[in-house]
Length: 438
Ligand SMILES: Cc1cc2nc3c(=O)[nH]c(=O)nc-3n(C[C@H](O)[C@H](O)[C@H](O)COP(=O)(O)OP(=O)(O)OC[C@H]3O[C@@H](n4cnc5c(N)ncnc54)[C@H](O)[C@@H]3O)c2cc1C
Image (cartoon, rainbow, N blue to C red; front, side):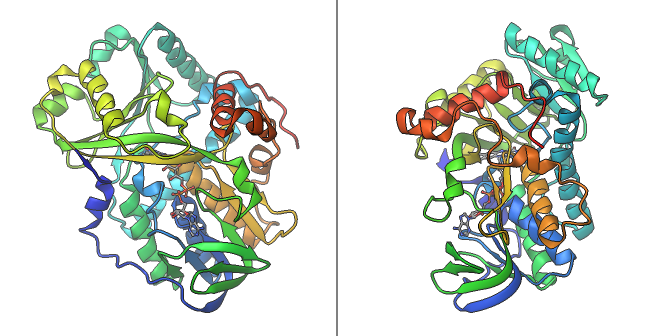
């Protein structure tokens, strides 16, 4: 298997030339730092509202986390509905589930409005129980969806043969409104739209510092009324808010196209996007050309401080998967790639206006493409006008000083990976916080 991001391979057929780096001092109404899903969504909104936008990225648009992702567009990114319901109650769960649902709608509307070629597929989600305790989790998720009157189908072990070609699962919940996407081609498609609208985009351009209204890069700078930072892997040298974010590592692999027989063996019904109930879960779906995209990780590497690139983790993920789907034993996997997902201690994004420089907003730790799309759009709308926005309530969920299990200072004793992993587990399985601060 080659260590190579498959989505970069798919990009070779697109006609979106790299934008040259910034080499002078320029001005704008708004400068956006970071052109992943969040930054691109912010740029789309602001350019639509008529702002003079500059967008800079140290990679290419979508070239970091967004363009490494598996492209599942499901509201469930690390936090299940039942877990949000336990923490925030019915009203909070409803408000928060709207975030990724709106994010998915934004992405789909953009694809439709601009004819972006990005392998967008309709794929229901299927959350699969690996064992009896997983069956309890799956049932809780089904119950949470029933309570909030969201559509679902719950399968017992005996019904599962209709939807998945492995006999070992103990149950599952399926729901619609989910899609698959090549998020790197989507990003590059959005880049084309933004360029057509007159947005100035500088790729391979790293922001080094914010100095008042000026964003400094190696070769130039942008002075703007407003600054929105949607950057990943932020350093404390750039902003102290970097403390609020760490990362989790996951691996993806891509196969040769499956034969129709293999596809029918995997999905006796429609192709679905699947993940299981393990703490470090496996996830898989098909691409438009019937390749199997399979992801997962290991306990040891998920919270590693530095990226692990060895193929061993990916090979283990494949072995575990083939143990469940022996009929796919002959499928060849071509490429694998790791990626680090930025996250906060409770797996919700942090979106804030810097109190010392209120013209600067930060969008940090968005786990999931739909969450990032919503948060970028949210920050953009709030940058332009605060009077007409109806969704201020989200600041209380996304503020940096919301309740966490362990404070940041405990990192000095326990280390960042331990503090973030314990907080993540607490937020997923135990935290109750029915009355977020107003
Ligand atoms: C392997 C993998 C699989 C995943 N699968 C899924 C999935 O199936 N579904 C899902 O919803 N989510 C998935 N995710 C998570 C998802 O990709 C992220 O949550 C999402 O892309 C975050 O978007 P973002 O815009 O916040 O961040 P990013 O995409 O990381 O964007 C931040 C941008 O900022 C730029 N940048 C950083 N620092 C600077 C700087 N100083 N100056 C200029 N630019 C800077 C980076 O180059 C980058 O382009 C996956 C992630 C990985 C790694």
